[in-house]
Structure formats: structure tokens, C-alpha cells
Length: 455
Image (cartoon, rainbow, N blue to C red; front, side, top):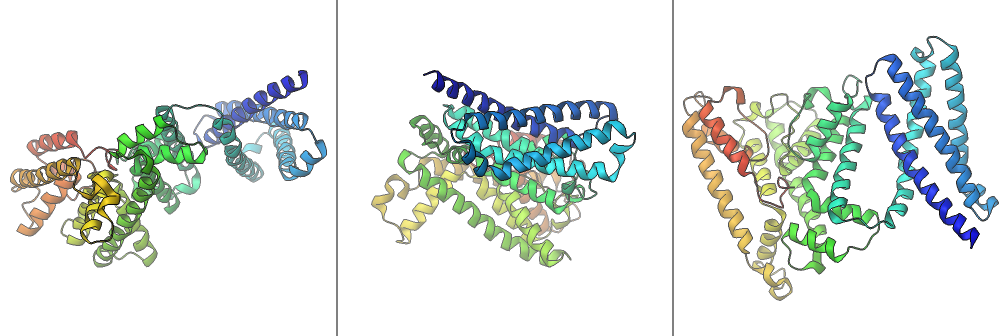
């Protein structure tokens, strides 16, 4: 009995060590990219380094003591143990040089050791997620907490990546606060920026922002479901009720199928949108073939997710007269803003009409639902009224030098994008106060709940 009690206590201590080491490692990676004065940086980094070293060694010793067969443990974890041994050797070598050489922290050797250290910590963080999953499986988490933690982890992970030098065009990662803001803006698909996405970030930084937009655009329900799936927990009735409510899906047993359908439809729409935008960029830009593909995919995802991030410093002002680009992006914004439940309902109705699916198996989804009618009706009213108001109030202003067709195209595009997306084909600084008041009202209304914008 005493042995069993020791094992339980040891396992609890080991779990605490694993979580503590994970948090400290992430913190150390953040600090190594932040801009501090030399003395503050040295103090913080050394404190964290010694704590991480102590936790790593304690973790290894505790795991060894808890293992029943010591030889098997060593054989099974030989590479992990060698990895820790190399890290410990580099640690003491680095500290010895740091405390004995006056200018060591500015040398190439110090930079190399810092890179190796950060790679080790990053690998350690990634390897710990598997063990962390096992720990979290035994913890009952409320759906609201799952959603909150999902978004928090994605935002912090995105901020950490955006702080890395390789994400910036000039090799200087974003400061912590700016990285956190940009990551939050991408995940929450607001489109607000503190640096120019087009010029500040390298293609890797832009790709990270794109992934964050896609995660945020798919919404709370997909991300929380993904978290549950990763943790390998069966969905409780409470989880199913919450997600079913978000999806406007009455059949709780089909939630998994519905979510797979949502992901599939999302990628299909974004793929078709990318092809339309590709044709538009070919006609209106001199981008290389590789850039054409990337720009098309980026703006298609950004538009469908109602994110508003663009890879041009003036957003889309240079394409106000392009029907393919303005019309394509507007169509993607509308599709993303009417909600997944409306899209899946329309897909079911069309499938029945074409004879591809049986009416009886779809039940209520074989007919246009009340929710779909309300969303489509109000969306049409808002789009038409917004277009007419923008045209009426800016006809003699920002639209004055355009021909009639471009005036209505620009007015329509702004009516589409102002509610949720954040793109623009005219300079907002040139708009008159009356239209700005109207725009604020439409921004307040926003898009449908359960959509990429609502998520």
C-alpha cells in the first residue's frame, strides 16, 4: 500500500514538473525574442535557464525512480536522455563562457548556442504536448473552458512564432506586444494590424498569419471540437448540446459528420475562390507564378474568413475597377458571413432538388429552414441598402472620378466588406462623415451568428 501511495504521489509530482517545464520553456522562448536592456535580459534569461535545467534533471530522476524496470526505461528513452545530456553540457559551457568573458554574449559562438538552445526548447515543448494530452485526459473540462483554452493556446502559439526572426522580411521578429496583438487579430479575424502585413513579414510570417486566420475563421465550434479530438475525449452530452446550438443543428448525433462537412465545404469554397482571384491577379498584376498562387490562396482564405488581412499596403485600392477581384472577394465575404448552418442547409436542399440525396434521410434539412430565410433576407436588405447609401453619399466624393459601372462596383464592395471583413477599395481617410456614421451602424450589425465572421 505504501508503494502504491508513493507511485501516485510521484506521478502527481511528475505531472506538475512536466507542466511547469513546458510553461517555463515557452516563457524562455518568448523572453529570448523580446527587447530588454542587457542587464534585465541577462537576469531573466539566467533565472529561467537555471529553473528549466533544475526541472529537467528532476523530471528525469523522478521518471527513473518511478519506472519499475530501470534497464527498459533507459533503453526506451536513450535518445531523450542523450538529448538532455547534450543540453546540460551546452548549458554549463554557455554559462562558463558567459561569466568569464566580457563580450561573450555578442559573439558568434553565443548566437550559435542560443539558436541550439531555442531549438532544444522548442522540440521539448512539442514533445511535451503528447504527455500533456495524457494529463489533461484525466481532467474534466467544461466546454466553455475548452473553448477559452483553445483560443488562448492558438493565440499564444501564434504570437511566439511571429516573434521569431524568420517571420520578418528584415530578420527582426515582432516585439511581444505587437506579436500578441497581430496573433489575436488574426485568430479573432478582425483585420486590425500594427505593422504592414505586406512589407513587414516574410512569406513565412504571412503563412503563419494565414493559418491563424483559417483557425479563427472556422470558428469556436471547430476549434473546440478539434481540441476534444486531440485530447481523445469522447464528447459529453453537454459538449454536444453546446456545439449543436452553435451550429443550429438539431440532430446531436450527426455533429461529427456536420463538422467534417463544414471543413470540406470551407476548403472547397476557398479553393474555387482562389482560382477566381488567381485569374484576377494574372490580369491586374505582374506577380511571379509562385506569388500568384500564394496571393490567391491568402486573399481567398482572408475573404471567406472575413479577416480583412491583405498583402498590399493599400489593401485592395489598386483593384477597385477589377470585377474579378472585387466581385470574387465580395462573393467570398458574403458566403463566409451567412453562417455554416445556412450553407449546409442550402447544400442539402440543392442536393435533394438534383436528386443526389434522399429527402427522408435529411429530414428537416431537406427544406429551407426559418434561420436560412431570415439570414438570406436580412443579408440582401443590408447589402442593397448599403450599396445605395454609399453611392448616394459618396457619389460626389471618393466615387467622383470613376465611371458609372465602377462607382456601383465600389459601392457594392464597400457595402459587403464594411460589416465584418475590413477590406477597402477606397481610402477611408477620404470618406465624408455621413458615410462613416452609416458604416459604423453596419459594422455594429455585423454578420450572421455561427459564420466565419460571427466566430
